[in-house]
Figure 1 (cartoon, rainbow, N blue to C red):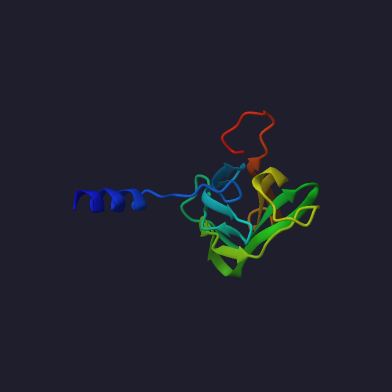
Figure 2: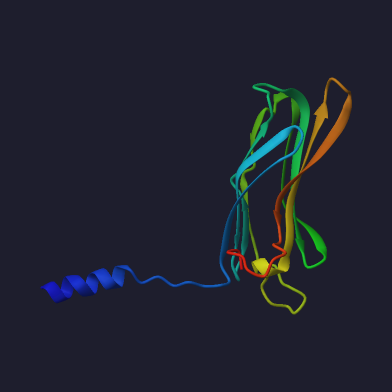
Length: 156
C-alpha cells in the first residue's frame, strides 16, 4: 500500500520543462495610461496575447468618441501588429478598458522555424483616443518588453 501511494505521488510531480514555451505577464505606463496584467504566451503552435487592463491615469471617468490600441511585437527586425482593439460611439467612457485576447497561429523566424522569446526584440502598445478638449486624435506608446542585453537572464 505504501509503495502505491509513493508511486502516485511521484507520478503527480512529473512536470516537463520545455524551452520553447513562454508565458509573460507584462505591464507598462505612458503619460496618460497604465497597462496591467497583459499576457503573451508563445509556443511552437501559437501566440496568444491579451487579458490586460488599460487605466487612464488620475481619471475615474473620461468621455470620448473613439479609443483604440495596437500591440506590436518586433520579431527580428520586423514590426508586426499582433493584437488590436477599438471602441467607438458617442459619449463612451474609456477611463478603464480591457484588452480582450487573441489566439493566433505560429509565427515563424527567418529560418522558417516557430519563434521563441529570443526572436522577440520588443513588445509595445500604441494607445490612441480622441481628446475632446483638444479636438484632436492623441497617441501614446507603452513599452512592455525589451530583449535583455545581458548574457545571463532568467528570460532565456
